[in-house]
Length: 405
Image 1 (cartoon, rainbow, N blue to C red):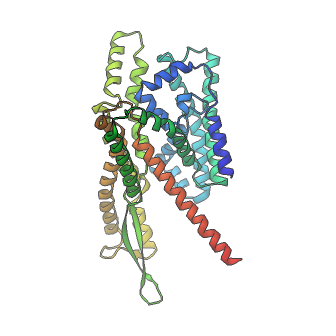
Image 2 (cartoon, rainbow, N blue to C red):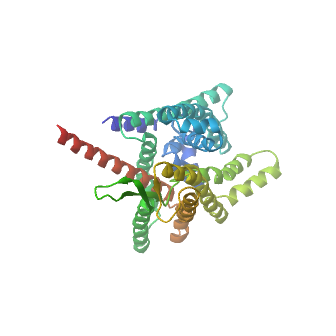
């Protein structure tokens, strides 16, 4: 009930408009810009309304990613990550503090982008300050709601808010998709539905797929007197959706800068900016090729951050565990690194294909405004599977509590 109440507040806040926006021009701009439509998906539909939550949770996600990466290169943050709950609370506090300047910077950038598109009038210093503060406060408010859910409801409240934003956007997305088909396009409609179901099935399969590496514990004995054994699961997609978030931030940057610089007085700069903006249009081949390789590269990078074969090998050796046929220590580390590298190739290709999926659909079905996003599907499936596992855990706990009473 608490989670439901917080989600209602979040959706209501997503419809409180920020000031100084021409709604008609904004709607026309989003209808004709694949770039802004993609950004609207990541904000959960609040950007199209330009509400006080227009930035969504993107600044907080970016701050979290920055601290995860800093933990890999900064020894003091790495020590905090190893200090358990206390260290995690400290990192969360630093993440919230970093979210404020990131949100303010993104709010100013969004204002500059929309002003260049004549959607928003030029604001005075005080009005601009009020707009930036409002949008920054909206992001912090959304983060607070997510943490309330984590404390009193489901575990990952921020992911649930992103999930809710995408689900709330589904009627509009499906309506845009259905509007491209005519009544005689039965074949295209059937193809679209079949491929959509297949995509969801493949995403679920790839999200749950894991390589089970057997672990044997010689020091532990079972009732039969033999050594105990277990498995170390190496997930096919260790990095989750994070590489796509990384990559989309970089691949959208040339197009956003191009649109921003297209209106400068210098004719040479404006012409170059328009060329860059056209080349990195989300429907262009260059955009999709760069996007795919960025996602693939970030998958390798982030997997190396979240899974350290050396640490896993040390922990196994300290616990008396070993992989059958592999010597403990360096040999185990090399073996885990080799297996993880092969898995990451498949996971990186999968995430890259998911990222460029919308362009494939547009070209294959011949629709320029087909609104289907592989990234959104991946987020929806990941969060839904997490919620299902959490609810199943709660049901198991309820049964055990019933037995003990």
